[in-house]
Amino acid sequence: MTDPQAATFERAKALFIEGAAHAEAGDAAAAEACFEASLALLPDRASTLVNLGTVRLALGRPEPALAALEQAIALDASQPDAWCQRGLALARLHRLDDSIASFERALALDAQCQPALFHLGCMLNESRQHGRALQTFDRLLALDATSGAAWFRHGQTLQALGRAPQALQSYDRALALDAAQPQAWLNRGGILREAGRHAEAAAAYRQALAHGGDAEMVRFCLAAVEHDAAPRAPPDGHVEGLFDDYAEQFDHHLVQVLHYRGHEVLVRELRQSTGGRRFARALDLGCGTGLCAQALRPLAERIDGVDLAANMLARARERGAYDVLVQADAVSFLASTDQRYDLVTAADLFTYVGALDDAFAGVARVLRAGGVCAFSAEAAEDAGDADFVLHGSLRYAHTRGYLERLARQHGFSMLRLTRQPFREDQRVMLQAWYGVLSR
Image (cartoon, rainbow, N blue to C red; front, top):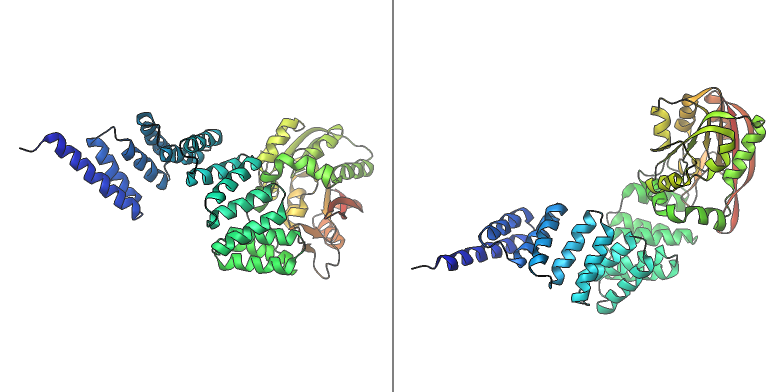
């Protein structure tokens, strides 16, 4: 006579083995069905629950994955893999601190758990703990220096710490082990571009393109270093990502390191052009962390701010200088808002826009009769016949003639257009056009 319990165990075991085979073959849905069926027969199997959590992660379902993994840990908390997979589920749910703690628990159980070290380093970088991340990747590479992905993350971490020459070495190690890493080529190109090594940067960008990198972003970078015709606009997501990453150190770096005074010059030009006029409602385009609003506040009863980057808006909100803050692309906001303004400012916005036709049209749309627009735009040097150029810094510069022509085309009178210092780049003070227009 067959023992029912033994038969149940064997059936659950067979389903587990079948699920593992499906998982190995990359069929996560079939694996999930097998693991769930196995658990229906034997509910308290920690190993089955860990595997179920793992395939649910592969299916992009972090919440049910976390439930299975926490059930597994409640049954057996001694398995590093369970804590590691739990860390991944928490990371997908944007619970960074909990994710970090879970990877650390895995490493407390097995100090040489390489997946836990790798993902811990990534999460530490995500939470801007770059020093700890570097120590973690150093530990990982001491165990195994043959991982191209680990060397890439090591390079990213060094770059975040401002150690570009060492980051370049790590990217070179990464690419020697695995050349099919487009982001490593792109990052390598960025370091070379910022160092003025444009020919080498172009070669790296072409490798990024050849290995499947984001074609729009790569071609944008190539245009900057090969001095081709400037794209009319940066790639979608470029500016938002740039400033979300920059938000935490933005004010200190821009003002103290790059000696940026554009917001102060712009408000001074505005004040002198309008005789100190006070405006009922102002709109600050590309408001960033709110540097311009502090200087504007004596001139405006109400100030609205628009910026694409959520992290920049969070800093602006802390500053408390705005009445309303909106996360949006500035040009799109101008084209769609029902609000009307007496003053529109754009301090250091046009540097990241490129072609300004839609921006000027949008400003004309939202300004009331008699309203004023004040802007700054990096001054283009040796632009030839072009209206604007894209520099190796990935920032646009515009010609005086282009700005004057746009003002006329969109019905503005030019009250003032002066050329004055703007900010430093590679220890060279850049010049900008500061314009004040009347509608």
